[in-house]
Length: 321
Image 1 (tube, one colour):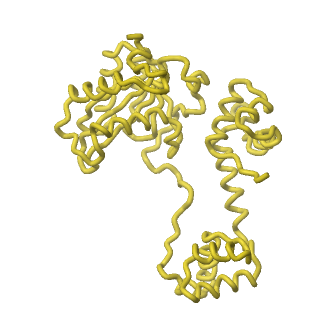
Image 2 (tube, one colour):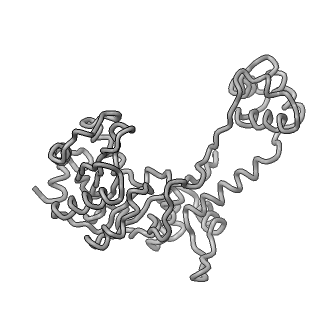
């Protein structure tokens, strides 16, 4: 049986289940993994919490440790000189790295990835070699993982790992996700969307620009007029949300932040934004969009039956009518 390494979403789920008090065997059953895999993961990738003096499992730290081991394992050549000579022979025939990798595997000679071929070319170049001139197009390496978050950083944010476990079940109303959506990327006007996780109920607010002041004013207004419960809000790491302490102070709602480049952690919001694009296509100006039009779009989506709710509408799910 082929072994597949744990993915980032699986590590996040492990963390949530551990917080809920689930045992290793139970977590393994939920993920469809062997219990030894979960045990090794929790033991190998746990980190020391200096302030508490405890060993804890943090999914983001666990993923970082896994990525580091993966990078270190690729530092040296994993193929012998004869195999690389065969690769160089095909490079001289002006074959692409993908053509070489696929053909060698198909002919049963040996397996090598096109990324490994590019790494071999790069090592040769650093050593003063000329293999790179055989490439049909000059290859510019792109990172296969995200670097540090470069948008405005803010200390002290509550991360999604700290969010109550009940949020994941979608059984309790009052847990929301928030995002901003652009129309034409060169214009300042945009919208803010708030989606309730248990019902899919949507609020849309028009913003003159994507600043903390404009976002806070509109968000608080939407929350106060709706009459729906607001217990938590989960946001991405955009700088427009860095005024969240004001929202918390005025409304009593607790704000959490998803990890950078993890859109699936706000999947309800991402999917709903896709539905909004039916009415506000990407690239279309929002300069003349009014709040009344935003309310009308939200009403259409809130009164549309959803298959996942047994064809009830978000309005019915949240308010019962």
